Image 1: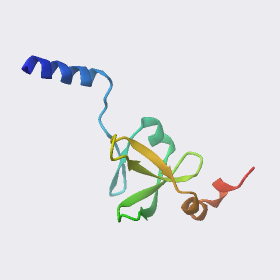
Image 2 (image 1 turned 90 degrees about the vertical axis):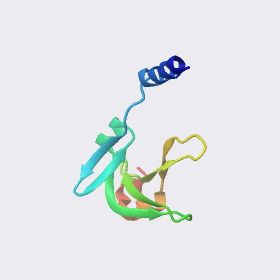
Image 3 (image 1 turned 45 degrees about the horizontal axis):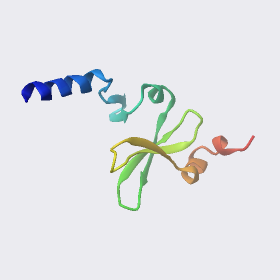
Length: 98
């Protein structure tokens, strides 16, 4: 049984699971879910509080659109939730139609 558990753990580790990346900005550490996103996305000084009272850091994508990182309860996967109304106030140039 121990060998089976160890084999399963080794298989999981070899499948490319990576540790969470963290970026330090001043005295604040921010979790980054993707190395590409770390280079392109930027953290703002703003926060977003949802209807359940959870607080999120508002970030800007490489195109200047505002979003927050949320985690689904069922699958536990992180995804971006874009916030256009907040983004229009923070960075209106990104929302001008060309």
